[in-house]
Length: 431
Image (tube, rainbow, N blue to C red; front, side, top):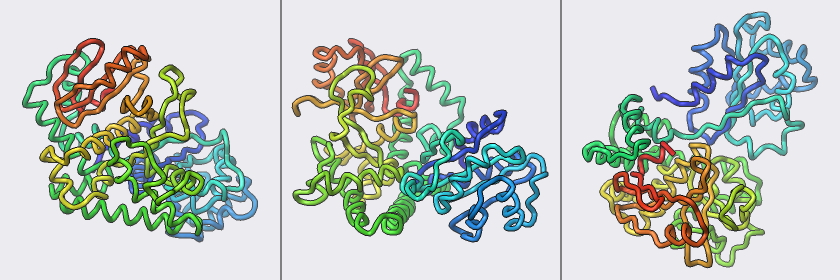
């Protein structure tokens, strides 16, 4: 049974007075239904589950009038055991994107005095045009991702106390004992290969079989492609799949800026931009935008037309590569492409920490992998796939652009010199 951090956020939501409906957003197969059902069964006396894809008859509940009395009557017709007078009741509306009228009805349901409502959906950013009226101001949102590295450590048997001890080394800038350092690097490499998709992680913890991991990951990738065919418009299907399949090639470039010409020869933004946005709205990818200037607010200095595209789960990126790539990462190989994979995992980790992704490039001669706000300070972050942490770009950006501090993430142990912190890759979870 995998422990997920979002569970505590669900507990906090239940304790609120006059709570709104709660919507959990996220990509397919990140564990939304599992964790919500676990929460509902453990924390409510009465739990009712509605899945709009498995049973389309439930859509009739939200046909016609959407006042509370009408909805309650239709709920009791569709679910004979439902009784609005029951205390401590929750209704879980799953795959709500399949019933746009139900999304509109959340405005009414948020004001009902009888029961709590929680919803989830995988392609909510895709179907927004079909929703008659969005319940703006009546819904709280939580974003759910595949397991982050700390959750992966828990699943692998590492205790919270052990992670707490490791964090003390991070906070005190003390060298991590070599045995612990090596163990954590090995665990981080496993996380790169396995990723965070719950089904994959659970199977790996039981069987420790990378071949099974690869098979499960490629099944998920095929499911994603099936969604692209099923839910995208007729004219967009092929373009979305082409953009998706180009991601490993995009990241193989020295300059990893997304190039439409790598999707199709002479490809242009006008043809493929909307397809990239589809992938991002489906939570399959993460965009990392170039900055025009190194100052706060970062959002105000974003160049929306220059960006990198990372996979939202690095394990799935590994599964898009040829057979044998998993072994190469575990053994510390893969040459130049290893840098792309390590960049992707840090982008993955930053996103799960709630950070937006930015990078900085100047005249094709200088590039910083990530620019973040860390401890309220503008911070340049360089990612290294080995223990060679020399970085002319980091030195230059701190000297010539007056960036106050830098962080290098690599296989080296903790170190500090000239306002640059060196942290082992696995310590990204503490940033």
